[in-house]
Image (cartoon, rainbow, N blue to C red):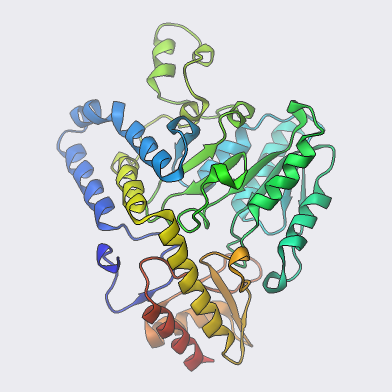
Length: 396
């Protein structure tokens, strides 16, 4: 697996989840499309544009166990969240419920949507102590947080601030029980920022029980940089209005004929949510190879490997005096991200020292409370993890 990536040979990179290195099949596809575009962009676009996005969607659907018509293509997670939350149909007086643990992209997308609609945004805490939290604590917080005006529940599958993985399936059960007592227009829609579970966890979005899942493809999936997806249940797409015009010919063609594109029933909402304009086509079209590559490996194998390495890392760090592991030890509440704190040490300075002393690449959580963050993935080995643990122990 490691040989598929052009990473520096003398480093242990445990931060590839931040922005991925391309595996060889993806890099080769990007280069092939780049050469075609550089040689004759007009003719290459004429040849591939009608089919390349559909092939990428079909490959994504095969990997996710979904239908191609349920998947919209975006440029990254933030863009996907902006498209989703910016287009959700809300009435004045309805409420968007989110959490204090979500990232800036969710909070800001929701704030901007509330400004345009008059809907209220409310935040709740799902746990007080990340490393000691439980499924019951998280699910109870959600259950108690939903109120009659709540229309949207916006959560993140794996928190980049702590490494906590939410029990989305159990949360979805709570939402289903609430919705059983509501009219369709008032039912709670469960929207998930899935970026740090996407490419790690084996459960496909349809089995999670959420209505929407948004993710970039250039983190744990190791897809082309500058790519992402929005998945939604077919029925849930009706709750979203596209905010950027699509170039799908089923919309563009009617416009040319003087018709209204929104009246064309055959245009799936996911296609309408895939924005038009010119993109980094060589990257977007290489999504096909990215999903095919991961499908050959298998979701289950990738999940097992990632969890094995993350557990090994957490156990090793927990044995070091002066180190406090923030991420829960249980697999049910964690994925690949491992956050920890070193007593009386600035997180950023420690990350720099870790690289200078042992060439171990780490990152810092981009939040007010900063932790050191490592993320072993399928391109790492047990030796990589052990080397990182030894390097931390030597610096504490």
